[in-house]
Each structure stands twice: as C-alpha cells, then as structure tokens.
Image: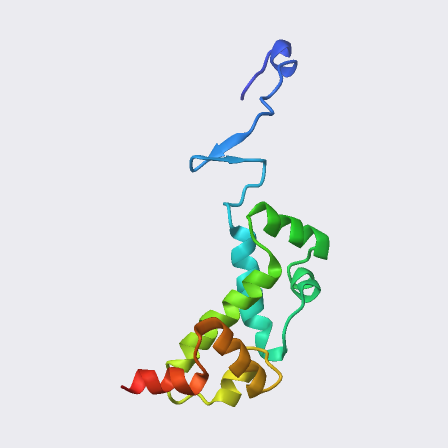
Length: 138
C-alpha cells in the first residue's frame, strides 16, 4: 500500500506545455495533423453522396462547425483546401483506371455531372480528362 505525506498533497503539478515527439502539445493527446487526417477520411467517405459541406463533416466528427474550422486552422489548413485536394487525388487515381467512366468518377467525387468534373480536372491538371487519358495510353 502506498502512503503519501500531507506535504505532497500541497505540491503543484507543472502546468507548462508538454513535449510529444519533439513537438509542443497544448494538452491535446492526439498528434499534430490528426484533424486534417480525420477530415480527409470523412470527405472521402461522404463524397459519393454529393459534395459534403463543412457542417456535414463537423457533424460526422461530432464537432461544431466553428470548432472544426479552428482545429484545421491550428494545423495551417482549411476545409475547402482539403475538399479540393481529396477530389484531385481521387480523380487522378480513378483516371488511371481505364475501366472507370467519367460519369462514375464524377459520382464518386461528389460532382453533379461530368461537365463539373471536367472543369475541375482541367483546373487541377491543365488537361481535360480525355487528354489526360490519351496521354496515359501513349
């Protein structure tokens, strides 16, 4: 059985910042960028149901919209950037599969139609989806 003297109960714990993996933590036990990773995962899960809003993602993560935005800002990121990056990465992944049609890709990425996908793809790569796929064949 452990015994503590009364003087030990009067001592205070250090409330200073904690070092985790060489980085200063403000009491959040989760590593840096965890919110960005969680948001990316939620976006990828919800994209086939249409473009998820920041509010939809916040609700999926059991946060208020403002709290989610603050967490992302603390990590130097924002929701719109993550949504765009997720769509771009998934578009490139699916465009490399010749079995995936443009309408399937548009659906999987939450676009309302192939025209919207084509415009976004051209903005991301400088090429239309057809030009991109023709370049893969050569």
